[in-house]
Length: 180
Length: 101
Image (cartoon, rainbow over all chains, first blue to last red; front, side, top):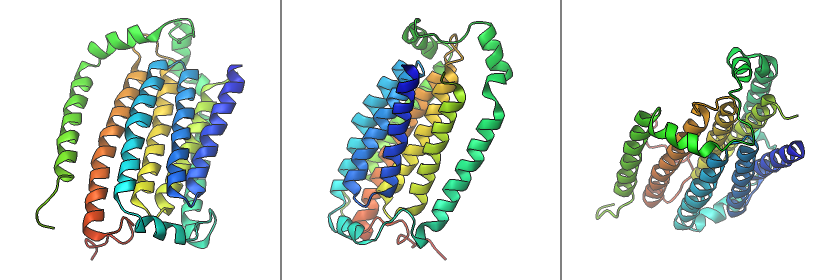
C-alpha cells in the first residue's frame, strides 16, 4: 500500500513538474505547479512528516501560489500574448543547453545517490540500532513543538526576524511611487 | 519497500526539472516557479532524512524553516518582478539588461 502510494505520488509530482516545464500556457503551468506541491505534501506524509505536509499545503498552496497568480494577473496581458507566440517545444535548438545541463545534473545526482548506499551510512545505521527511527505509530507533533521551542529556539527567532524584514522589504518595494 | 534512495531519486528529478525551467523560460514568474521547485526538492531531502531522527527532529524542523524562507523570498521576488514590469513593461529576464557592460 505504501509502495503503491509512493509511486503514485512520485509519478504525479514528476509528471506535473514535466508539464510545467513543457507547457506553453502560463496559467495552466501555474495550476499544474499546484498539483506538484500537493503530490509533494503526499510524499511528506509517506515519509512520516505530517506537520511539514500540512505546512506545505498552507504556506505553499495557500500563500505562495496565490501570490504568483496575483503577480501574473497584475503584470498585464500583452505579456501573456508574447508568451503564447513563442514556440515552446521541450526540445528546440534554443532550449538545447538547458536540456543538456538538466540531464547532466540529473545523471550526476542519480549516480551519487545510487552509489552512496544510504542504508550503510554510519549515523543512519546507528539511529536504526538505537530505535531512533520514526514509526507510523508515534505522534511526532508534540516532539516537534517541544524541540522548536527548546533546541531550535535560536534559528526560530532568526527566521522570525527575517520574515519581518521580508515583510517590510516587500511592502517597501511594491508601494506606489510618485516618480517613475 | 520504499528506501531513502527512492526519495532521493525523486528529489533529484524535481531538482533537474527546476534547473531546466530556470534556464529555459523567458518569463520571470516561471523562473520563480523553477526556483520553488528546486527548493521543494531540497525540502523533500530534509524530510526523507528526518525520518531517522525521532528524538531531535532536526530534518523536519529545518524543513519547516526552509518552507518559511521560500515564502519570504517569493514575496520579495514578486514585488521586484512587479516593479520591473512597471518600469520596463516586460518581465523577460533576457531583456532586462541595463546593468550589462
